Length: 297
Image (cartoon, rainbow, N blue to C red):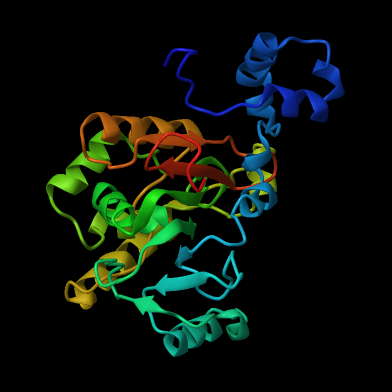
């Protein structure tokens, strides 16, 4: 990818103010520093790269749909509506079953057990999701559905797990070929492969350990047992939707996949702003735009 079209958005002025060791560098040299050193160290490349900065970017007056709030919505302002796989009481029961606080579950305005957004009869300035886009069985179809919910100039803001720093660390990164295969199959439910990856082949979920290079180890016999349980779970499901990760992204990989989808006419979004993962976190931020910047985002 050429420097004129970088995969990761970078703000040289912001970067310079954060890091005294690079104040003497010009803007071009700062980008080189970030791409060769800073990104690997987890330095903050942009105000919107942090969760706080990203959430503060949402205008207080914007009409927003948040996808997948579960027990801890990211946005709680007056104009936010919520979509999830389950109704509120079912989400509360699920939270209790996972030893999570049920009182945080918001009122759910829209729901569908397989994540289908077609029943939503409203338009929004922003659709927002946190750790939800990686669950979508057909990524291209999901993007098409989200785009249909946006007002002119709207955008899709996503917080995405970085597979290098979460329990997906040992599982292969998703590719454009994987995404295109899922779309060609019109996949609406997760595959046995998705289930085995999620249930049996993951590692620990401590991002600080992953940043330190401690990824844990996999016990072969334990993995064999878990693979067997995943296969049995799939058989028992009778084809019903099981909610697991379908995709494993890094910031650069996600940016490149979306550029491919745009170029192939499979994503309605006209641009992407993708920010690198900050040190000792397990997520990165991205904005998919329906038109070049200057819209709601």
